[in-house]
Length: 81
Image (cartoon, rainbow, N blue to C red; front, side):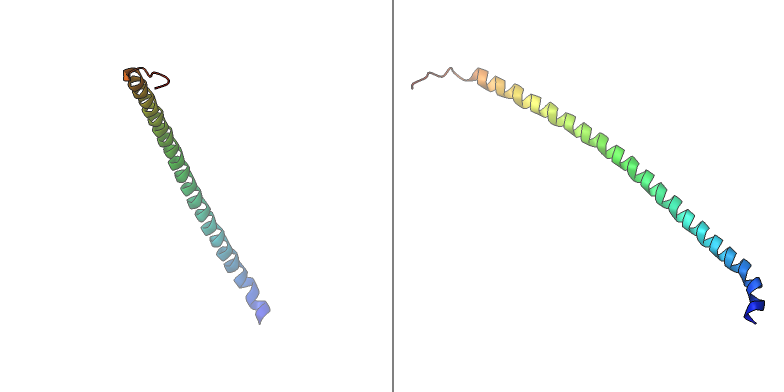
């Protein structure tokens, strides 16, 4: 009785397996799109980091410029007093 049922069930098992394969492939494609989306955020973040670093460098140059004005404005120091 089982041998008679096997030939009719095989196509169903093949279709069922193929649907699982297609389902898995759609998950892989979905995951890859998330990876690409994340990589674009990483690139966007790196540009923000570089932008922030340029502001830090700009601020440091202002600090150095201000310190030179302070040093220039101080009266000369007399050693020994």
